[in-house]
Amino acid sequence: MKKTIVCLAFLALSQLCLAQASFQALTQELKEGKPAEVGMSEERLGQIDKTLQEYINKKWIAGAVAMVARKGKITYYKSFGTSGIGSDQPMKKDDLFRIMSMTKPVTSVALMMLYEEGKFLLDDPLSKYIPEFKNPTVLKTFNEQDTTYTTEPAKNEITIRQILTHTAGIAYGFLDAKKWGAIFAKSRVPDGANAFPITIGDRMKILAKLPLVHHPGEAWTYGLNSDVAGYLVEVLSGMTLSDFCEKRIFQPLGMNETHYFWDESVANRLVSVYTEKDGLVEKEKNPALVKMIEFPIRGAKKYFSGGSGLTCSSMDYLKFCQFIINGGTYNGKRLLSRKTIELMAKNQVGDLGTWSGEKFGLGFSISTEKTSAKQLGSLGRLGWGGALATTFWIDAKEGVVAVLMTQIFGSTHSNEVFSKFENAVYQSITD
Image (cartoon, rainbow, N blue to C red; front, side):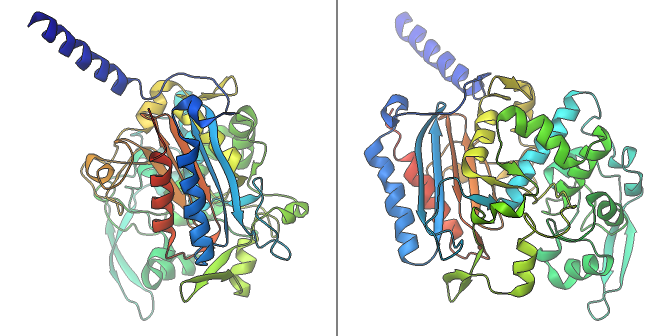
């Protein structure tokens, strides 16, 4: 009996230690490895091939690059289909993708680096550093006919924590074109990355005087929060967001193919953006949209969008994911402490609901007991995606990081593709 109790106590202690050791202070760089070395089946990883090829055959996606690593070993790295570059050349593993909202976690890391340096506290009012955000207002009534509106004073100031968690009440215009799209358009506030000769600082100061969707902290609303966070990085560091990320994040992590803007010479690596017609993908033909999505290589190259501006290779983003799962280190460089990574991975929105049903930390979505029960994956898994159908996730419990890149605007099939890709990865785990 005593032996049984001791064994049960040891098992409980082991499980507790496993739960607490999610983010370990590791420094290893990603290296190619055999799946069997890290408890994965090479044969079962082949399900990814079947899944992605099936959707290419259905013309739900034109091409993709998929990457999986476990315990620091890259176990899967393949490209599929066509990139749409030139005369539809085959997709290459090192092709470049506009990652759109997958920029947000990078911006959050940048801001948290300044947090560690004592530049601010998370519950400081945003107006302490960007005065234009003082005395925010909330939308009360809106006239769709002439886009006029009335407001009421917000109950409290916006905090930096609320900016990082999308609880400030700041909207995106494209999610409600008739209301917020009209309000933003009248004030010439863009929804993110663009080719216009404007700066993030100029636009965020204007945004600060526009009404909020709701009182700060009362709901979760996806919006231009990360662009505000990006401008805050500029204010606190004295550098442009681009320069800060280049010098403080990309260079130390060896993310040499991640930038806000590129020379036109890389056009032969920048994957074409597709759209859907009757559920099937085709190259985007709308001249206005084509001009907008060429921002990485053409245009003014002045708007450093903290929410959507980066373009990178799949390998570079996997390095960023590995940096997170390593507990803030990679390539022998420590950018954040393990405790800061743990804080970023904690539920910061309490009982507030998000559109996915998951919770939200400081830059990532977090799977809950309810959402993690819906498909393969672990409780506490971090992730996010981009508007042009890119996705990533970080599962510290299983030691898995994964990235899937496509380029489709308005994809109606991406949720299915992403979910089946994720299931294909998890079903390959053998230990």
